[in-house]
Image 1: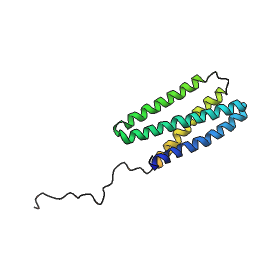
Image 2: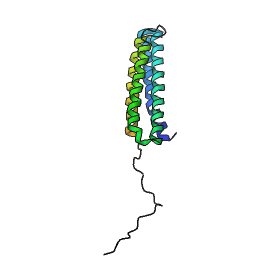
Image 3: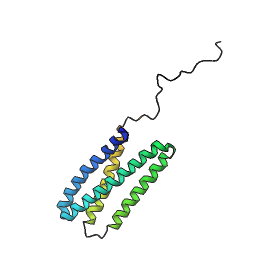
Image 4: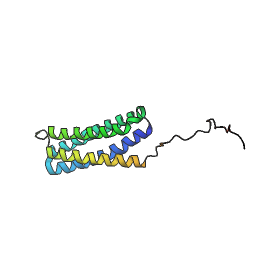
Length: 145
């Protein structure tokens, strides 16, 4: 994995994990242990979903660059749909507080998207290959008049 990919992944995952820890603390204070568990599960789900999505998108960018934009749109749509399905599936659970889970899930998704956007804006990624010094220079073969 190239260093830019790792850097982007870390710059998105670390703020999400920190915000998740804050969400766990707030949920523990508001809803007790079940709230903290719900917030923790939501944070882990967001980091896993979004992290795997970022890795898939980076691999697609390298192997099929002509599909990059379409793949990105499809991937984010699928991720948000899956997160919505998670909220709906655990709506009536008794294992953890579903409100803390849902609120943390949405908040951590927004934190991840914001951190990933910031990481991409700050990245110095070349989008044009610079000419190498060793490359053969074009010769003027036309007339010299």
